[in-house]
Image (cartoon, rainbow, N blue to C red; front, side, top):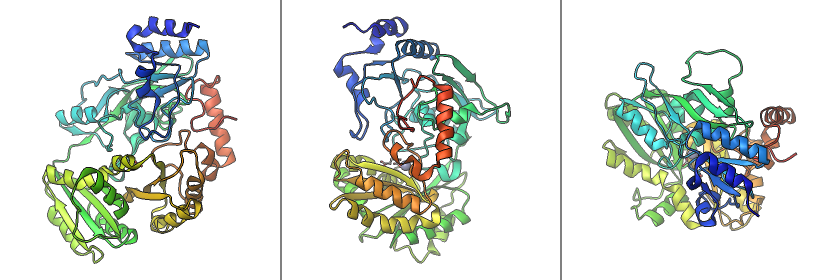
Length: 454
Ligand code: 2HG
Ligand code: ZN
């Protein structure tokens, strides 16, 4: 039977941008880990905000649910169809406005990649505060929608802190625009901050106004071998209290480094195999290598270290951390549990979680790594069936017991919605449902994401 919606959408975006053939849809239907996939009714690729509005209106009229999608680098199943939805790709909204050099701000379309934004900021003598490993594909709209964090949160915060203004299409196809955005603006509800982290369930972000930060010209990275995470956190605390230029503080373990070595061919970073690796980066307007070396020298827990100042050397050290995700993926389809703990419980969590996983599913292979400076660990688990959630359940219960959150920076998606009540009260969830109902009464936008069907 001909799909009337296809014709309507072709009239809005042009024939070439409504994808109905299975092979053309495929790249939009499966997530990066291959754990989440579903068939889309079609993929539509509007070119601008006005077209996004028309597409949303047409879908609403046809009763067709929409899954908004950016670079499709999400890790919780929130950006791929579950079955029969329209995938609304925002990638063509890739315009970057001129950098406002007086305010240190820029307006960019939802489809701009993080790498392109970094480059535009750099060319204007500024920097953008958020950075993460999938920078070449991740788009700003998706990063706002998931309130992405990344490796510099300890210094600059996540996407929420960069967001000064927004433009979005609401579920009825109308457009709300608060651009360019003001640093001070107390005029009612902050809809931009509400859309940020809403994972496309309350509106479709089409453009944002973002804060930029001063470009730091001198960087130093240290890769450190320590006996365990507890010791690693001591080192991070020492650097943090002594050096305001601390920009990243990451931790990982031999289980992950072994995989990185296996899949990238990189040499082992140190002659000995420590219990834990810590990577810190400081960035300033002048060379702070001496200061960092001095702080580190006073840390008795460090058993081995490598310092890098030049860009290729820094990249070489970062590779041991940043190439975890792809190396894990090369081993199989992981379950990805992105959790955060109060910093004073993080080491206890790390010490207990492997056993908790082993007890839940004997033979499961945990690989932990993450952002030690902000209490965020990525608990990746290999060797599990896609829908065997026993290990996930056990880990989330441990997180809740220790006062943490089941999602630090990846969002809830469909992957974690069943555990929302572990760390959100009934009243809290009811308030979230009320907001969803108010802004999307027909349940058109990313249905089933964050909040399970009632
Ligand atoms: C990172 O920190 C990303 O590299 C991905 O948040 C984490 O692959 C993961 O689990
Ligand atoms: Zn991360």
